[in-house]
Every structure is written in structure tokens, then in C-alpha cells.
Amino acid sequence: MAKKKKMDPLEGEALIKKVKELENLSKEEKARACGYYTVTKNGVDRVNMMKFLNALIDAEGIELDSKINGNGRGGRSASYRISVQSNGNLLIGSAYTKQMGLNPGDEFEITLGRKHIHLKQLDEKGEVLAEV
Image (tube, rainbow, N blue to C red; front, side, top):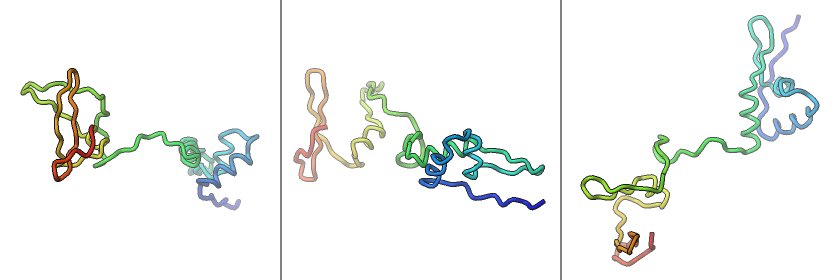
């Protein structure tokens, strides 16, 4: 009995095209036909549905994972709320400064409104660049 050669799993447009051609097959049969299976020691095909479905999602360009910015650590997401610290300071976290494209050393003019604090970004000459 000749051993069948396993094909490399299809990806991208080739995967999408093949799945559309096999529309009348079950999802397990589609996965096997697209190369998403392994052969066990006993010669039995084991379909890898998770890899198949993930490859199909990637091929369709669907982004399920959030993009991680900066140094690769997830961290907390911005809640758009801050509290006054015990020393009286307001700390604006890195999630906000990154989202606004701010860099260490950027300077601001602070103006107090009735219920708001306005930050006006200053350039090197001390002139207002933008109101944040």
C-alpha cells in the first residue's frame, strides 16, 4: 500500500477559492481537502478544524485580535476616566498619550474652565499648536 503524500495547507486566496469549489461538502471534508489534517501513526487522518477555521478567517481579512501597540504588552484599556491622586495630582496614562501621539517632553498650557481642564499643546517657541 503506497503512502499518500500530504499537501501543504492552502492559505489566502487559494484557500477561499478551494472552499467555494467544495461548497457541497461538510466543513471537515473541506478542511481535509485543503490540507488541514495530520496522519496518525495508525494511518488515520485527523482533521485540524481550528487551524482550518483560523486560516479561513485570516484569508478573509477578518481581524479578531486587537492590535498591541508599543512594547508588546497588552495592559489595561483606556477607560477615559481618571481620579485625583492622594498627592493632588492628575495622572494621564500612557494609553491616552499614545492615542494622542504625544511624546516625552511635549509641553502644554493648562486652562481651567468651569467644569473642564483644557490642555493646549505648545511648540518649541511656546506658541499653541493644538488644543487637546
